[in-house]
Image 1 (cartoon, rainbow, N blue to C red):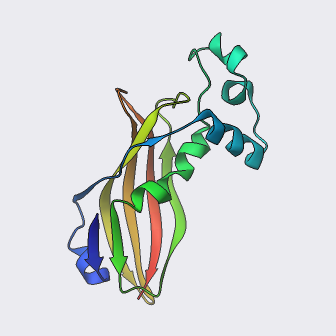
Image 2 (image 1 turned 60 degrees about the vertical axis):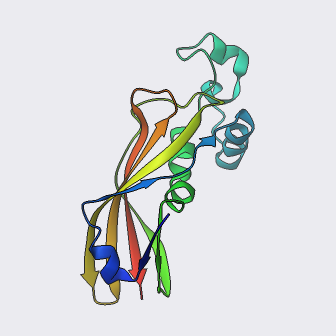
Image 3 (image 1 turned 90 degrees about the horizontal axis):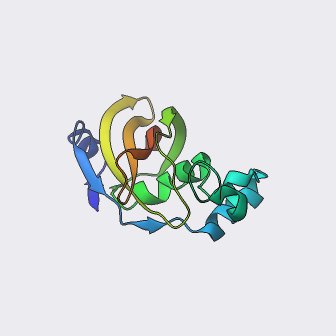
Length: 150
């Protein structure tokens, strides 16, 4: 965990890889709960029998479930102290290059791309790359945007 004391200190880390989170298992139970929360019950996510005969041989996590893990995983990599608040402003770009089969372990690596000062704080952009243990391609690559207010 890298801890930055304020925005000015975070700015010094632009261009650096900040580290990796711990590994997390994406269970079928979590996939099913995400399906219930979003209403996305596509068979490739929730029907183990049908998915076994499908293109991946098992159920896979929703792409948006993988994306929803980014705040938790990135939160293990770094934090900025001395802020009144930090809020998610969105994503510039999100891709899902590879699936996450149920039971897979994933982790995130974070690279700080920019910190741009503004009138009430700063906007930070990070590239978060989620990888699957044993996988040869990332499962999610997202450019996240945060607004930080001191």
